[in-house]
Every structure is written in C-alpha cells, then in structure tokens.
Amino acid sequence: MKLNSIKPAEGSVRQNKRIGRGQGSGRGGTSTRGHKGAKSRSGYSQKQGFEGGQMPLQRRVPKFGFRSPNRVEYKAINLDVIQQLVDSTKAKAIDIEFLIQHGMAGKKDFVKVLGRGELTSKVDITAHAFSSSAIESIEKAGGKATKL
Image (cartoon, rainbow, N blue to C red; front, side, top):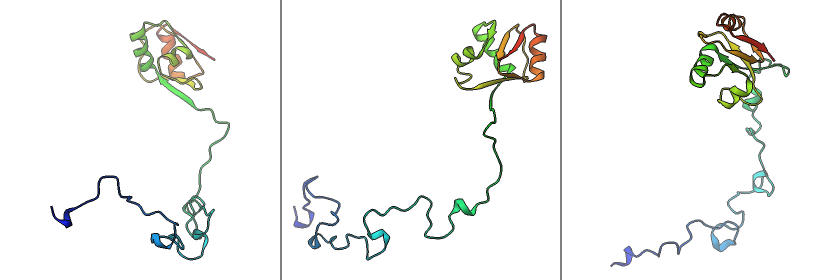
C-alpha cells in the first residue's frame, strides 16, 4: 500500500459542491451566477422559446392552412377488414359497440365504412357514414347498410 493509492471509503465524500454556503466553500458570493442581470436574480425564469430578443422560431416560420373547428373526422374501416372480422367471429350484424369491443374504433369515434376489398358474407352494418361503393358491395352480398 502506498500513500498515493489510498482512497476514501465509498459514499464518505460528497461529489458535488454546495452552492451559496459561504466564501470558504469556493462557491459563495455570487453562487456561480455571475454579476448582475436577470439570470443572477432569484425568481428568474425564461419564457419558453425565448431566444435572447432574436425573433423566435415559432414567429419566424410562416403559418398556413386552416382546420375548421366544426370538422367531423371519421375512423375509416374498409370492407376487407369487416370481412376478416366476420370470418373470425361469425357475426351477422356489426354495429359501433361491436367494433369498439374488437378494438376497431374508440368510444368517441365516428365510423365510416369504405369500399376497399370484397364482402362475401351477408352482414347488416350500422355506422355513421358509408361510401357509395361500400353500400353497393354490402347490398350486393345481401346485407343492409344503416346510417346512424
């Protein structure tokens, strides 16, 4: 054992210096905040996105587009997905509650049935909206499309 290899026991020495605990600590006086200015004072908080007086990014970038607050967004479900559901569950009627139970839609979703794929089973479908091709395919298969 040599004097240069001796180390204090684990956890006995504090790793970080405490700020504002007098001149003897090495971090007294201004407490590492520098002299004067807003950042040196208590209660200072910089506004989010502030860039030191430079025009902030969110104000420099051009704004465009419009989304109506009255817009109704639909959860789209295609006929091929409905056919898979019918094949796996042997259901004769599909409504919103059925789709929610099987994870196809959320409680607050408006559902629109679209015409991609082919429907081979006779199924009665109840939804908020249908595309014209979906109504055609459902009725062709012997089912019924009912709007809520």
